[in-house]
View 1 (tube, rainbow, N blue to C red):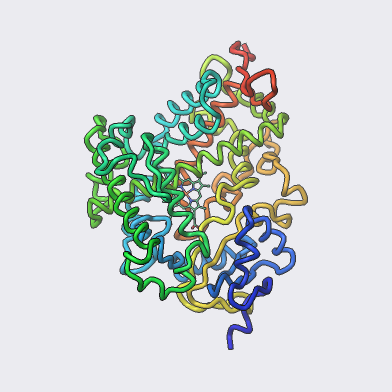
View 2 (view 1 turned 180 degrees about the vertical axis):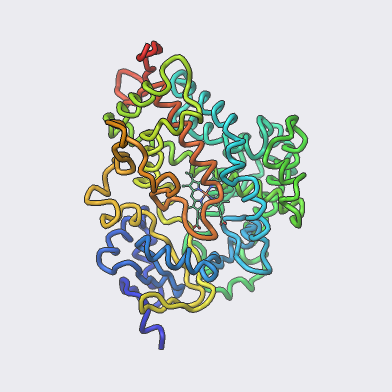
Length: 478
Ligand code: HEM
């Protein structure tokens, strides 16, 4: 009877529901954004019998995923992902007693909280300098390769400097050529970690595997069910990769300062087995790599589109830092415009526009609508970040100034007081499942963006020249 009170939403076919409408769309969030204006803050979809609720406003997401987080911190059940090891992988692990998510999250929090994250700043500065240098002088690698390399700062933080190399790949208990259709191994550990991320996200895509629609298929033995055989094989390969990388980090980290060393030696990871610790490190790397590099690419895109923003940021850097030294984290309080750019990139183009679904553990009601137990709640971060009721009529535009206000002392701008603590966007998700690496990510983005804009000008590529141009080295203020 309660099903009469499901939230409004587009009508689908009797069996497949809305699968067909969404299966071919490459940017589903744009379809959701259109539906938001038709159906309101919360809408219901049927994906081949599975209940899905899309949360379109910050108010709905805050009420359900944060205030009622005890009921909304689970992840959707996914048969293929479970065979792949999602129970050990923090972003996808289920919530609740028989699962290890709580212990992993506690251990992850201890090594990534706001205070501890400042310890990684020296490595982040070194890597930001290398990135700016590469962007200027390495003319042989594609832009994406350079950006991906820089996002690997987080790998230095997790596994220690230079601990992952071809050596780690060679020590794997299988050949690099022993590659499956769905999980490709390459000599580069970073690429292998990226491929593991894709293996999981492909499995989690709604309707990607028939077994999630017809659970009876799970009773087929692996000898008949190819998907199961592949997933089981890939699980043992992923686990071996994470365990090998973890061992190498312990062996090679002379300074005993990596996140792996903390996991292995400190009490933070008490109660976790060695394999579980290796999965904490592995799943942090997988969660960190593509999100950070995508955001940096989107920043470059924003700079190409908005040369005025770039110039404004460079004037701030020239005034505060000058040309005789590079920017550091100590400059952060004096660089409100640069901090606003970090927030605006994450608001305008969130790296994961639909975040990661949270699942309702029990039946619930919201504003007169029924949310059945087991419903996957998708936070429509894209639309929340462009909500005109919150950000004004220019919400679709890239405008860092929205986070600033005139200083009381004079003409200079300062970050609005509320944004000293509030992100000002929803790119990192919600409640108990909010992104664990957000402090490290914010720091990495801030110093990378400062270093890039300090060192070079970003312009669209022309047939006659490269896109990056060095800025004059003379101190403009001197
Ligand atoms: C710009 C960069 C990043 C973005 C936009 C981002 C975004 C997200 C989002 C949307 C979620 C899902 C939150 C939810 O379910 O409500 C998430 C989860 C997570 N992120 Fe990030 N992330 C970034 C960087 C990182 C980094 C650098 C790390 C690790 C050092 C990291 C580790 C994690 C982990 C472990 C989770 C799973 C948390 C859980 O399920 O309990 N992320 N991230």
